[in-house]
Length: 304
Image (cartoon, rainbow, N blue to C red; front, top):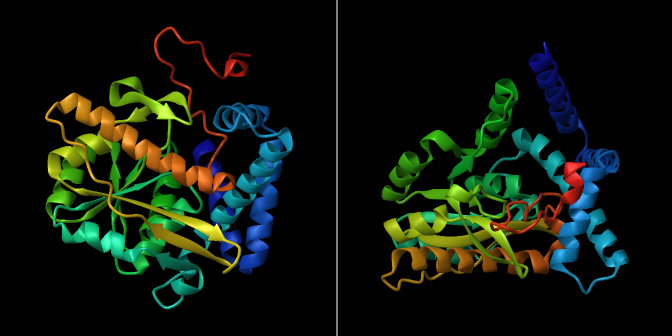
């Protein structure tokens, strides 16, 4: 019954936001996110800690402004997600403009597949969805949602534009096959990662446990690593899906050193994007949760 109840709630929210006019849906979703955030002190404290790490020179007012922007961004993205059934090749240009397509095409031309390097920046769900509508479907790395009915519903929406999921249990095999066929794999590379799958690299000047998977796959396959992200542009009133030039890999001949140095290089790219659009990153995530051995937790309030 709990599983069905959760599914019904998500279904009602998705369908409800989807039928509302877009401005109303975005406003309503942003308001709901602000209420949700206010009711969860752990999220507020996590954002506060993260912003103090990333921008120690900022005032409290600057950090609070970024949190307000983040909440608006999350609400807006939820509304956009609910509207996926309404977006098509005919109307996507009204919502998302493409910048730097030549950089993505350069990665494709290399013929060994593309690793779409991204993070929880801007409208990350919309970025891959829109890219498929522009003619470039991809496979995206995904974790199963605990509720299988919600998991199926969410992935049905994600796949409406032609994208396909790669789930963790099948990730290595499927990813290598997609890249061998010169396909594209989208990977979110900005979250705290379990130590057995990670290396500690600098992120905003603080060691962060970071996935090494992208570096290992890129070094093994020769796939192009192309940063891409969709951020809201107030001037145009659209999201801008921006692709940066492919990241050139470091190859020294020392396998583990190459993995570490390229992981740092990819992390630097993500950090630079976040610094440019701080209000469009998810500061409520415990990015520095896993610490090097012997270091205390940065989120002590989580133990209370």
